[in-house]
Amino acid sequence: MVEVFQPGASGAAFPPQMIRDALVAINCADPPLSPSKQSKGRYAAPVIAEAIKHHRGGGISDAAAESILEHLIRSGLVKVQSVTVRRIGGRADIRNGLVLTPAGKSVIEQANQGPSNSPQSPQSPASSTAGTAENAGGDP
Image (tube, rainbow, N blue to C red; front, side, top):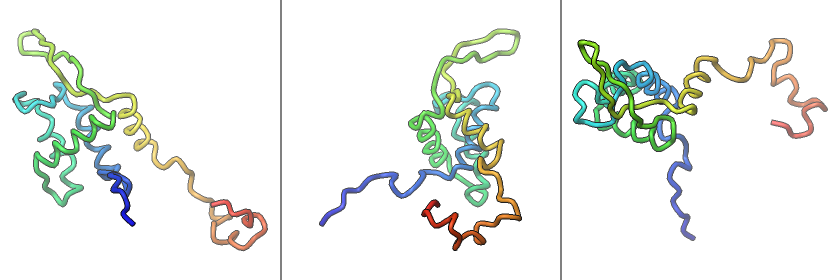
C-alpha cells in the first residue's frame, strides 16, 4: 500500500509565534515594506529576518525570511497593494507594499489577547474529575 503525500498534514509550516513576529514587523514598518528585492531600504526579507532571529537561535538567512514572506502571502495573512511612500520635501510616491489582511491583523490581536481558554480554577482541576460520572460521557 502506498500513502499519498499531503504537504502540511504534519503541522504548521512555521511556529505561530514566528508568524506573529513577522506580521508585527510588517505592520509596524514605516515606510511600508516591499516584496521586491529591488526596493532598496524597503525590502521585507531583512526586516523579517531580524524580527524572527530569536526563534532560530539568533540568526536566519534572507532566504529563510523570503520563505516566511511567501508563506504569509500564500496563506492570505499579507497582501501586496499600492501604498503611499513619503519622501523628503513633502513628496510622496505610490509603490507596491505589504499590508496585513484582516486575517493577518486577527493573528496579531489573538496573540495580544493571550490564550482563548481561561485557566482552570484551583477548585476544579481536570485530574480530579477523571473518574466521576460527569466525565463519563467521553467529552475531551
